[in-house]
Length: 387
Image 1 (tube, rainbow, N blue to C red):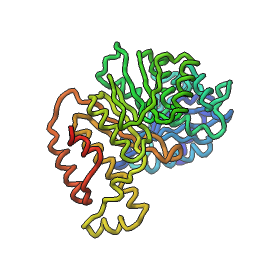
Image 2 (image 1 turned 90 degrees about the vertical axis):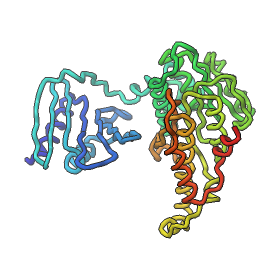
Image 3 (image 1 turned 120 degrees about the horizontal axis):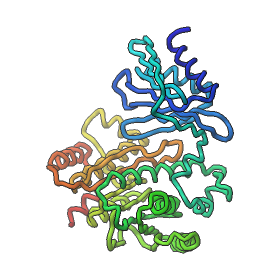
Image 4 (image 1 turned 135 degrees about the vertical axis):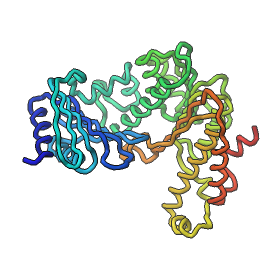
C-alpha cells in the first residue's frame, strides 16, 4: 500500500466507524487561487455524502460527493494540489504532511473539533428563524422541505445573507441603533425577507428594511405578506431607483438592476454616504456599445460577440469598483455563488472607509482603462461629476 493509499484508508476507516468530523486540505503545492478545501460528512436526501468547500481567495464553492467519488477526489487533491491535511475524528487528530510526495502522519488526541451533526439541510436552516416566509414565497412546503427546482434559489439566498451578515459584522456600524437598509429593485423580495429574518430574529440586530420596486402588484403582495407574518419593520415602496430619495440609510442593496440602473443605485448610495453597498450587476449594454481598441491582440478578442460581451462586463464592473474607491469605499468584486446556481453571479461590495486615503492611483487606473478601450462616457462617472 503506497503512502497516499494509507491516508485514504485512514479516512475510510473513520467514515465506516462514523467517527469522521472534518478534513482540511491546505498548503498549496504551487501558487494558486485555491487556498484550502474543507470537507465534512453530511446527509443529503437520506444519503451519505462528503461536502467539499473549495476556499478561494475571494469566494467559496461547495460541492457534495458520495463517499466513493469523494475519496477519489481527496487522493487526487493530495497528490496534485496540497501538501498538508488535518483529519479530525471523534477521538483523534491526524496531521498529514505530503511534501515531495513523502507522507508523514502524526497522531494526537482531538481536543479541537467535537461536533458530529450530519444533518446538512438542518444546519443550513439555522440562518433563518421564522421560515414561514420561505413557504409563503413558494420555496418550501409546510414541512420546511425545499420544493422541486427551488434549491438553487435557496442556495443563492443563503449565500447572499451570509455575505451581507459578514459585512455588517466586520463594519463599524453601531449595532445598538436601528440599521436602515434599502433593497432597490427588490422584485419578489426573496432576499429582502430572508435578510430581515436573519438580522432581526437570528442575529437580534434592530433593523428597518425598505424594498423599492416599480411594479405595483409586487409592492402590494410584499407588504401584505410582511404584515401577515409580522415582519413589523419590513416595508415596500413603489418607485424607480433613479427617482428614489433616501431619508436615512446605512446599507444599500441592488441585485440584478439592469444596465445603468446599477449605476443609479451606486450613485444614490454614495451621495447618501451609505456605510455598506452591495450590488450584483445585470446587463452591461452601455460600455458594450463603446469599447474598441487600437491594440491588435485585443482586437482579436473584441471581434467575437460573446468575448466582447464578457469584456464589457469586466470593464464596466472594474470602472464601478474604481469609482467607489475614489469616493471613499473599500471595494471587492467576486463571484458570490457558483454559475450552477445563477448566471448573474458577480457581486460588488463596498464598505465606507473610516479614514481618507490617497486615491490618485485609482484615478490614474480609471483614466488608463478608459483610454485603452476608447470609453468616452460611463453613467456612474457622469452622475458623480454632476455632484
